[in-house]
Length: 315
Image (cartoon, rainbow, N blue to C red):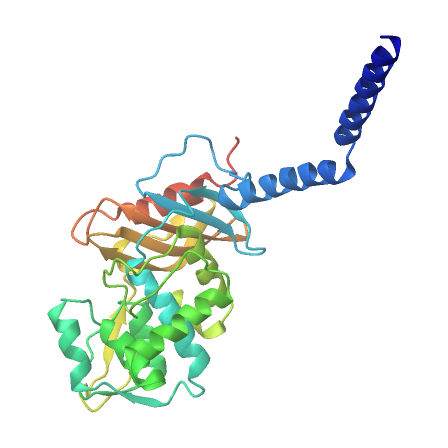
């Protein structure tokens, strides 16, 4: 009987040793630590901790992302990683791809008759160019970004890639290259397609990338542009920024909106990618999903003034 009790005691002792060893396992401790670090990292990426605006700030837009222009960090977001439709903010990517594939921006691009039919069928916005018009690429870029001309998008795509589908592949390749993991493009204009989507943070990343290009920066911050005489417009053509034409003054308390790209479809709502300066520091703001249309008050523009004004206010 005594030997049996000793055996049980030894077994219990060995069991406790195994338990203590499991508790002290370095591999297990390291695994737990890595999980904690990964969790914190993912939480930061998905919902940045640096929401540096006044708590409870209300905006009309369903999605928003405010970015520090200097370092690309996200300072504030509202559903910033949620899927949304970018509407004509898409043309930022169209411009980027065109700029990276056209060596001479004075090169003439002929707008074929065929490209106008789908644009007219969908009642897309245009800059005012006509079928058969021969236009320098630089003027098409201004027409693309200021009045949001769909014929400019189609003409640039045809010139670079011979077809919209081939050009769209370049757009998606560029999106992956610069880290737009929540985006997919199916066209060059932003006309609604359920498979054409992005996120507010992705679009901020794209806008930040685009603004590093001098030509893009110059165009997007221009209130208007006058294209010279062409074979279809003897006196040339002047068009205006869809953003600046909707605001009385770009200035707000402590700063000013420098430029931007508007967008709207019924599914996307009012959208805006804008650049502003406040207290000598630049910021990018992307918003989408404001419940308005092209005939109503610019809720997306109201949101831009609200967010930019709130920067630096006491928390």
